[in-house]
Length: 339
Image (tube, rainbow, N blue to C red):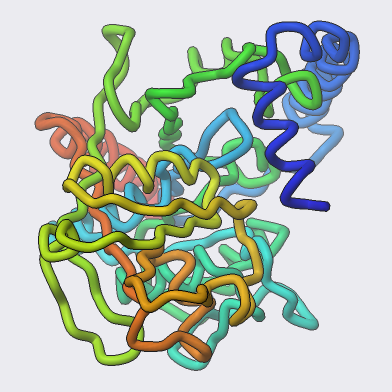
């Protein structure tokens, strides 16, 4: 049922030119609610929290995947290479811990803290805390680590936490769909929200001068059981299964297609809770999946199953611009603390 509803909504938002129009009044109500909520934060009715370290929010204004998880991993690597100590906070979407916030470590599971959080912590090695309230997660992060910058996975609309730098990530193929706000379209906020962010990163080809391009690359597959690594090209000689429970499964399928693979594709809703039957097929063909899905399948996978790690590659110059702005904020925070 959830799988069918998810596909129907995506069709309405990105393909159907009529149903979204009928739902447009609801989209206007949602947009007005978003604007009113921001107004309450601006006049102080709703409280904002400022942290003693710079906060970089990496989010999007649309529902569904845009590629922000690989970008967060790339930014964490960049900051560490510059001698900066980043910590990461996230919603922990899909996690079912009994209490929040939760610390993410080697003993955490996707069932507790969510698939994206587990993947980010594993890939970056950075201290990480998750919870529905970003402020509480950030405070736990500062209590348990010595990070001097916080990266917030998503949270562009979480205005309770003041931020120093905002990065909005856009899907270059789907862009904004029908450009309506929920539930008529995929927008969490009106498109003009992008006018106030510091960077607009487009996963794919940009269409505006103020956008920064980012490519998602991946050319190897890793076996879930043995850890063996193979170039994707070694799978071109046989038929394969490809499955993805991410915001935009087609992007993963196209990555495999561009590498020359012929795959039977299987789409699932974002953050789908896989069971053995979901990844088992009647044949012995290889099954390729995203790394985000793999963290939830490790306990029941077989040697038939492989995941494809990907990397975000922003255009040259982005890192330099970001570091310059971050250092200005670090200097400003340090000065306020010493005054």
